[in-house]
Picture 1 (cartoon, one colour):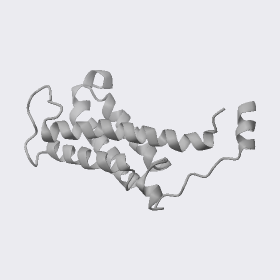
Picture 2 (tube, one colour; picture 1 turned 90 degrees about the vertical axis):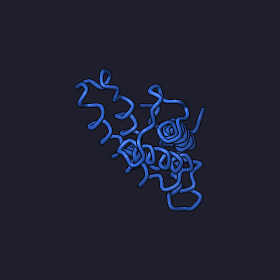
Picture 3 (cartoon, one colour; picture 1 turned 120 degrees about the horizontal axis):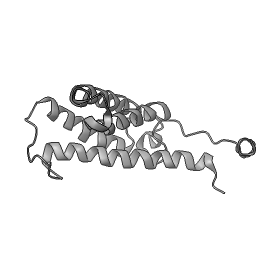
Picture 4 (cartoon, helix red, strand yellow; picture 1 turned 45 degrees about the horizontal axis):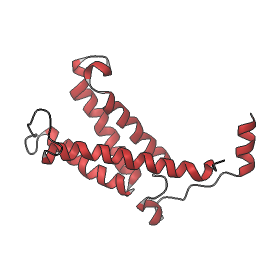
Amino acid sequence: MWDMAVMAPRMRAVLRIVVALIFLEHGTQKLFGFPPPASGVLPAVFSLSWYAAVFELVGGLLLLAGLFTRPVAFILAGEMAFAYWIAHAPRSVFPVLNGGDAAILYCFVFLYFVAAGPGAWAVDIMRRKEPEPAPVPAERDAAVLRR
């Protein structure tokens, strides 16, 4: 059986890395046209969308490395909340209709990283700016599983 005290920080790191890669892709699409946007149009330099793309690119890279995870995730959660209310909510009340489900999910995943930290394999851990996750005693795990 897997030791959940060991697996939890690793799975949090996997979530952080996958979310960062996908989020980073939004930034590269808006800034560099890769992958090519459906509209074929890139945002004007210094426009609101351009600034969002810079946040997505830089924030995605920092999250990927696990560097300054908590403050970066806090800023990106705010960006996604702002993006939802500015770009998506005016189209419809329902996220499935306004295309805002990804913005909502990103917002709450980033808030999770603010609270939980980067997980394993993060520069923050190597720099000791983030404490190592405390292992849970095996007896406690067994007691929880028996309930």
